[in-house]
Image (cartoon, rainbow, N blue to C red; front, side):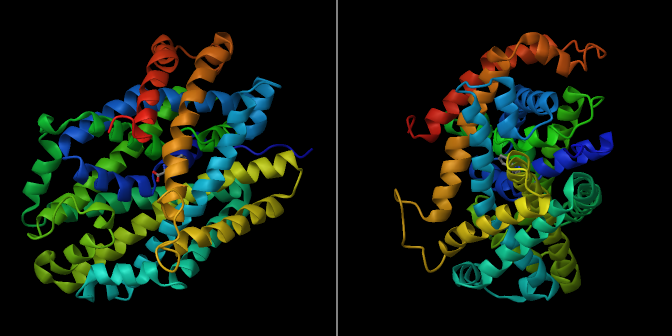
Length: 452
Ligand code: TRP
């Protein structure tokens, strides 16, 4: 057998994992949730969820992946042979594939909007809502863009762990962070931006209902890429000297910073344009922002153009690095279990996602009246994967690492076989054993509508 690949440096490890975490969830979903859930109080809850639930689960996935150096399905087979836990490995692989099918639809939109902003279309259309709807509901255009982003992702995955994932994460992530920094500064300099800052920084705790708390948890999971085998698969490429807790800390810090910065980019801009509401919903970045780009900067057209181009480039980069991390667990599984060549395995994943992605893409147009359980295909894929499988996976991982794996094995991984001093280990273990399963159980019941 060929030697299994690994990431070559600690920087590569952090940037690849952060690339997985930083995605549409940060730039698109987070501001939408903040707008819908009342601003600063939501952000505080979100941060609490990242620290108390997100971090321990991320370390747990790292433990499973790095200990076995196998793809997610085989990792559980090795750690708990012939037991029900093996199910979680397959669930991870399957959920990844399932998420990729609809994640690539929205990623395709970001490519379209990057091109449309380059050509000046975004900053010149009078009615950006109509423009968005006519694009997403047309049969061919969104499909073409979905296929294009999947091909871009395929191109990276085919090159393998070092030449593909690591190399491109090291290129794309610094660029992404740079763009964020520039955009934050631009956004702050807009007139009226102070009101946006107040919305983000002054918590109004009267808005903190239980459903806000639960949305914050759901968002933290999605944003950190937890519970689907992505991080576990990446961790199987970690070197033995990588520090799991430190890596998880860096990834969570980068992810949260990018999410909050995206809020800092979007809300000051939105508030500086008087008649746009902060809770504009999922259309925020595709409908509201184009309006902002047109009016902001005192109407100086090229500044608005530049801001738009940078913003959609940011969105596309974020989407692509996340797509890579959702593609890889499935590819790694096919490749190792069936001894396929990487090229073949990656092609199977890409082509099957394109085929099923068609359903999700068309559900904004020709298939919008075809519903299952009252949801279009797109909504169904989102609901089943992000709202059912993610919390389910999260609970299983917490129980598996907290209770099933021998404590010594977990401690060995976290402390790199006793060579690191980890005073936080008992805290970590407590969170994984008790806090995470209980809290996720609550999100889960909430998602199923039991608290409404
Ligand atoms: N975290 C990514 C985002 O913020 C999306 C993502 C990648 C993801 N891998 C995942 C979400 C695994 C849930 C589970 O957009």
